[in-house]
Structure formats: structure tokens, C-alpha cells
Image (cartoon, rainbow, N blue to C red):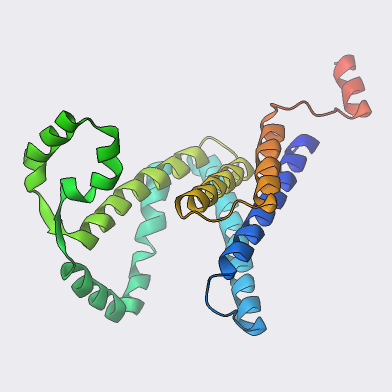
Length: 232
């Protein structure tokens, strides 16, 4: 990796850390009392381990695609299918959740999407939508939200696996970091959290780091490399 790619990744990492820390500080003011130092260290350790394992998975996927071909759909299937048996460990909790979901309030497909769709439609368009056959589709509210979440997650994870077949593991992790950062910003605005100075610094660092990594911002080339290019 070139120096500008390394600098871009470091800058994005710093920006995400600053923004996350700022969000934690603003949310902790109205949350429950702080946990003990032992629980905090345990949580940070588990998150760090998860990050290392995710990085290792990206390298493993890159090696697999280079050796056996870029079959991202096969990777998508096995990544999820091999993890399914682990849900048996939580069978009791899953059974309780199924009963809770089934007992939730029945709602139509149109009414469930009304808060997000209605503001963008005219009165006539909204009436047409409510009179359609899809307005007769009624199911428990939580099951409908789970179905919507499953569809959006499939679109998201399919894009991740497709990108992993055409980009390096570092580029993929950078894109995922920017995606998580955008999700963090959306949560700040949607839940009306304070956008502090730390958020502004983190936002600037993330976007500048992404621009440096992608080459949108010029990065000085070392003297020995420039002389080598001239000789070639």
C-alpha cells in the first residue's frame, strides 16, 4: 500500500474514534449510571477482538477469491449458513421472541410505512396507495418490521460481498467504516442528539481521509519514487 493509502486509513480511523467518543459522551448524560471499569474493559476487549477477527475474515476472503475465483454469492451463502447452528444455543430466547412478535399489534403494509411514505406523496397519491390491494395485507407489526429489516440487510450484505470480490480487503474495510460513520451521523440527526465539536472534527477527518485514500486529494510523492518513474 502506498503512503497516501496508509495516511487515509489512519485519518478515517481517527475520525471514527473521535465521533464515536463524542456520541458516547453526549448520550451518557441522559442514560443509566455508568458501568463498572471491569465491564467497560470487557466490552472494549470484545469489540477489539471482533475487529481483529473481521479484519482476518477480509484477508481470508481476498485469499479465497484469488485462489478459487471471485464467487461472491457462494461466499455470501456459506458465511450465513455455517453460522445458523449457533442459533440453537439461544432457542429458548428465540421461542419467546416469536411469541412476542406474533402478539404484537396487527397493522397493514401501508399504515406501517405511512410515517416515511406519506410526507412525499400528494393527497391523491396517498389515497390511491391506501385503496390498493397491498393495503389489505395485514400482519403483526414486529414481523413486518423484521421482514423489512431482513430485506434491507440482504441488499446491504450482498453489496458488501460483491465489493469484496472486486476490491482489496483494506478498501472494503474503509468503505464499511465510512458506511458505519454515516449511520452514526444519521442516528445523531434522527434522534436529535447534540452535534458537538468532536462530531465536526470526526466528520472532517473521515471525509478527508477517504478523499486521500481514493486519490481525490493530491499526496506528495517521495523523491526516490518520482526519480524512478522518470527513469522508466
